[in-house]
Length: 570
Image: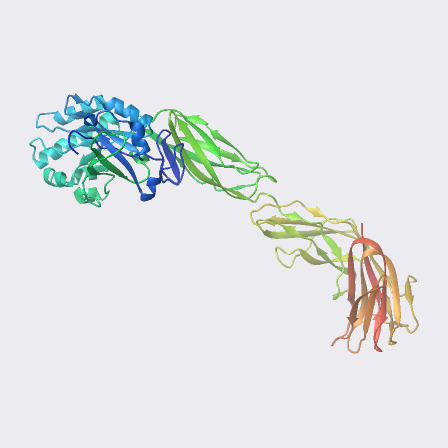
């Protein structure tokens, strides 16, 4: 850059501190993962933003045309030495910002060996500008030595920057060329190491700039003046062209704020969760008002406080059980203050807060079980939950007595074996807990009356061919048997479950079972070992009704009828 031209910077919204965005509303945004109130810049796809630098030598500028040409920042000469103020600085700054460009001010240094000269130039620079929102951090343009040796010039630049930091409240950037810095300042990296990390390097006609001071202390270049005689609509004659290394100038803002948000963690349906929204301020004291978008159905949010001059606010999100769905939701937090808008994103994870849904347990009969001093029953129910069921529980009450626990074959089983009185009632109830610890209430099943009908009952109809035999090891001490083919027995009852009690063993026969006149299944009674009081066949219905069971022998082998058991649900 010559003393007659000024460099410029680009501004766009940025991702800051965990997926957040902040930028002056009037400034264009490009390439960020979040949005602002400005329009995205296609140039950001290259990873750079384009700008210009100007001074009074460019004369009258149409900043709307400059903006339309895709330029997103302008660095403007503000002052020189200890007494010069560029007469067009104020107008250029105001008009460039009105056109949506970020603006930066720079001071053209005139180093001198006079005592206090560096601090005096920094004070003059600070007095010549009034930086605020829409401005970038100020810049020192150092391209002449004033006759100072490298060590003396390094001391002069250090003194200027220290005084400017005190006056502006931020560390300025440094503009220089690689050749000048290497010769006039002995390629020192002391300033980069002292925290002056923003380098604006002037290197024309190359594909990428050379960066002095060991790649500026490892920080690289931030701005690059790559052409000293470019053509831009709206600017008469030649103008310096500049490039910003990134798609967001938020870190280079003189005055602004960003938002820092942290995940709320899992929030159960029906519960309240929260997050802390940090407000990262840079020379920005105005109040920031906060709002949130993207809440799922049934969720409401409040900020405490909603408007603040502080550095944080607490977000509270209340969800509604049965309405707010489970899942992950991306909330957009928007902060506004003066003409600056910033955004942050926080992920709200709604976890299952609803306990498992259960059906009422059903008591039924099952074949392959054995009659004893009670009737073996099978209790079953269903339990479902989006998060999965981790455990179930089952209790029973006999004859209206106290509830007692029934052991389950596994923690999440939804069926278990139990027993009912030979004549009496049984009632079951079930509960479940999901994997997130949501526990259901107990769900009661119906009261079920149990009963045993011995083969000697007058309610059973027999064909010819049946014989009665007394045996102590069968139910009631006796049973009936036949070896006749197509001998039959019929049992009519009212209930929701029925089972036939018989004997299985070597040489036992087979039967056909009919229910209400329709074939149900074939039952085979042959077994390697004998076992009495076996429920060899069972049938269950959803509701109680009157039914007739008919057993017909299928071969000339022994078939025993010991008893029938029944259940009646009410």
